[in-house]
Length: 256
Image 1: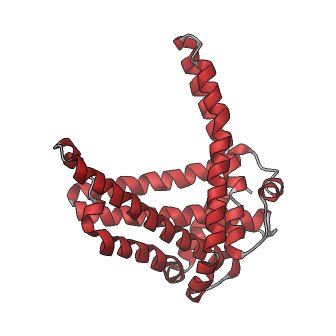
Image 2: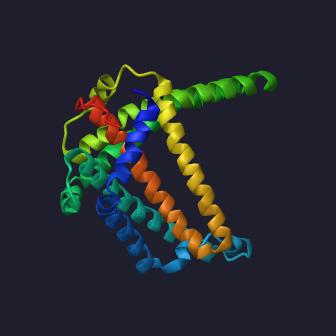
């Protein structure tokens, strides 16, 4: 099994039945965006920094507060969307399962918080390394810092993929600890996980470029294009986790 095969499987699951994909994932995502529109209107999606540069700091602060709330709402909608996608792929649960997905929201969200805490803790050695490098001459510190950063990034990606298997587990109510996720996903090199991340990153970058070009033509169209990029990359990444969970935890074969 290769990282490319995992990516291809996640991609295939999206397009095998586009109608089912849309019905299982789009409602919570669109629902969150609709709530944001109803609460804050179009202003919250504006990126015009002139409000601050013109000296209207109060208006800028209010806009930032609204943006924070809007981001939180869209994040919650995206989480519900991803839970639904996990359940559709692993349990073959149709669009009627959105209510079941909602019931798994709290356990899933708690595991997201756990992963955030673990990620922060894992960055501590890097922070200590930066402090240690600060005492070295610049000509030595820079190359060492770059190489160390790349080394950490590669291994952190592998670490993140492996421990994140607790997310699809939470979506379907399968008991799985961080230790279990780590031990049961052993046997693959860091390059296996890096290749998955690179494929997902390339797709996200390509779609992001399209969204940027569309935004240059029309801000409103660019806004909707950006929503589309967020939507697709979220279910694509969730699909890679779902595939890895099926293979490592459930012992499924990787059919392409």
